[in-house]
Image 1 (cartoon, helix red, strand yellow):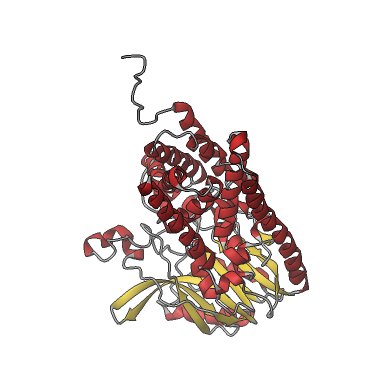
Image 2 (image 1 turned 90 degrees about the vertical axis):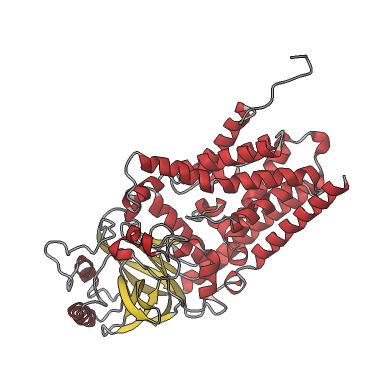
Length: 521
């Protein structure tokens, strides 16, 4: 080998760059509710951006981004191993291998972001400080994910930072976080002679405006929340073990008088406006008349409306179908309305691509086979409020939730019922709660989230937690929620795709501009 020859780089050309990329993913994971170090999200991607600036090839950039995605998802979503074990019956230690497979599949989002960013930065005349956040939001919004996530999910307690998502949705905060990371990298690692003041001024101006407007909005909504009337919400948290079967009643209880009813007795005489049970148990309300009769009599005795989940089977034009259904009983115990879950969990409630194949029916089990998504969002007037039901997986889709709240959000309350027992005593329920906080702020409506194993909570439209129960225990609590029939809804509720479509168009423009400049060269 002569002096001007060198070895070809291997799969990971420079091990120290790979370590920086892995470190970026770990920092990002630490910003999630698993660890609640939310400040780290504002710096987590700087190591990745630093090594991308010296990347030797597009392939190398892709691998560095993939390493960041794999480490971030493996650490931040470690609870996937419990889901694989409990919901998919993947035994230990293969459930941990499932986590790595999951991280590899969905870590591709970071690999693609790194690849496109590096390609654009080679040819575009637009500074990388701006191209990186645009590309990141674009890729995150179009990449199919099993459990959707964003950079902003860990910011649920950083109230000033989350206020402007009522205009842009969660994507706006993702953009600002990515822009902050990009600006820090630019200031710290770009050569002094290459730095341009206008780049710093514009990007810093965007970030400062985001926080200044957020501060004003938070103060404004604090006043509105303080002036609202008080609604008392009865939250029931049975802490049942997750199961795909139709479990028999616990000792001392029956289908006509389940554990949830006993936990609800604590609300009698407390002037509760509505009682809400979580997702995750089969009562047989639509199957047996004795159960319906008992529920009616008990609720009529309480004189308090009840919202509860139950599996149902109903005849449709295509035959008998199974649904995950939320039932709304009025204070007389009569069925006021029901809502069928529209967004089903892949590989748990249905098999993507194979859900119509009879050969695969057995995989879903006798409880969930042929599970059918609902076809209509519901707004249910109950207890002087307009309840907007969402089940478990559905709050992960911000546009879907916003479209249900719609142009007229006054008097609406988001109600989320979920069964997170599949994930064991992990941080997953807290991550789920963090996501629903974002939905409350995006749409500027109160939100009640009742989780089978907790923590269950009530969130005000400003993102403040009005009540949060202890996780992994059973109990019933009365939570006070500020409510106004004259408040609710946001710019984002009316135009949920506007900001996202602007970012997508900008990204496509930059890609085309880069391709043209590459061709000219």
